[in-house]
Length: 294
Image 1 (cartoon, rainbow, N blue to C red):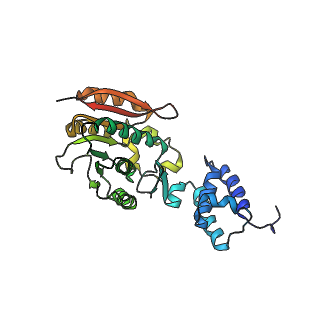
Image 2: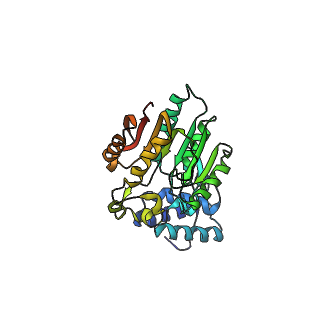
Image 3: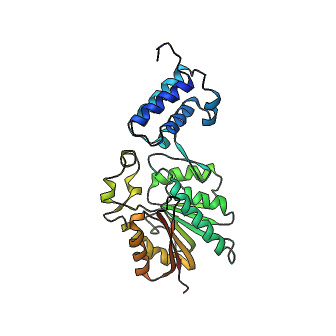
């Protein structure tokens, strides 16, 4: 291609897509579009009406830097500072996990359980353990206008991001943020629903993760210990103590620990109606357990 040819939006996207494909990006075209839209400070869809436009040098310089960092493995969500989840935008930094589509099943399971429980108790009390950027807590508050959510995380840095997202979505009156290791710093209140996307990657699996996950996302939020179930083993008994009779515990899991998670919950004896929900790929993803009547 002659050097005199202009670096239009269309040419930048084509070249960057080919370049990122060589760097093993799983979505090179999408990455290119998101990064260029960020550099241009526009919506991604606006690129499609600007293919023949030549961005200013300042925009191309910013774009080149974003592409360089993406090629080195930095996730797009961290580069642009946000990620969509459950049709809502969320701020993300390297202090929190990047929201994943699979976690939407946890939200759906929570809303389904809430629908059942709200027949006899409209104003539900919900705990989101390991809230991270606050996605589950905020989605619950946005979709259940009469609920109160206690969003818990051991990381003060993660809670700062969650707080920003809570403010953005205007649910501050119904989402309480608590810095705590599980329920250690939470008062003796009880909950109708406890949801958690805990660290569940085992130490051997951590060594097999893609570089863009292993090198950038917080290990504290990923690694569940030698087997991946260590946090779940601690959470199940405390959740049983904190749930009202007939309340629900909902856990996002790895398909590799589905059986072990069932065994942990069964061994406690405080739960019934235990089942696993599968995600769109057919993988075991969310375990749902109902607290026994007292």
